[in-house]
Image (cartoon, rainbow, N blue to C red):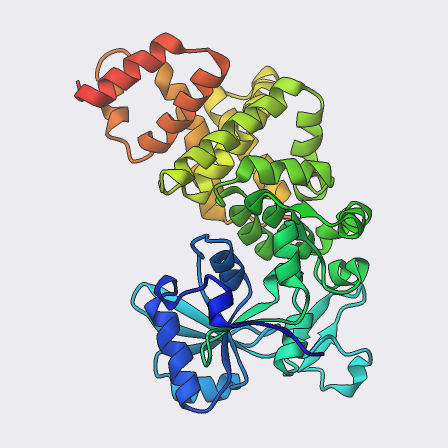
Length: 402
């Protein structure tokens, strides 16, 4: 297939907008005689005049050749063998061009390519051509290359046209591609929400049909993807797509059914996501434990109330509610134990805001868990118009320190 080529004069991508580390890797590869492209989301975002989060590179150099070429390189991964080229404060992920999933996996050694019984790709290190690499990517808008040799844009999959039309389109048969890697379904929702695009009808219908397969995705990978969903700066729009495609239920089963029962519960989630988006746009850092505390806070309060009514002490109930929910969720999204403990601290510390006598407030103010607990308390008080006098008290105390 002959790709569509955009000359430098026909597109807006400039080396000035590419990280110096990525430029160094690209030119080193070019000078050593290898083909080297910026690939995927970095090209997409540059064409959309967005600032890429990172710059991934695709090349015909093998991982072993990359390791020999760059002293600051380490190889990672089993399913995908990748090179991480390390610079101060930045990692340039560099991958060898890969071939599509072979129709007859028996043609390849088991340590090169393997699928599971359900069709998911478990290991895949079959190298290929730039065209093959482009056509095995998930969506057309992520299959674009920027060639450092002549500054052109290379399009094998129709991604340039879909960028103009603002469409998320799967490369190949959506049912097959989502079976290979169910996480692609929530990536579609994230791109649609983040970019303000529509999901192409065939892909959309496939997601709705295959949503339950998301339960087959690796829980540790799902934890990483959930953070991308809600830290992208467009969490509210992404959440809309997760609901619309019914992906929310296999991700957060009990929680999603709980919020379906009452519109006010749903409103809390939307209010939280709006706040997350404001913080992200202000470039404020929010760690994963605070994210989970905020999103699931009302549900944890509901579970804790049930435990208190059954005779559990309030402080213990707050902690037990968090552990019961997040540990149970680990089958789908594996939240690290440290994060679970931090969420437990945030929720159990809510009780301390009601204690304003003597030296107790000053001691709490100095506690390392106070800032996160206060953020939750403040958001909850404003969302529900409750504890307004307490919020004023703690806001003043925090400002004056006395």
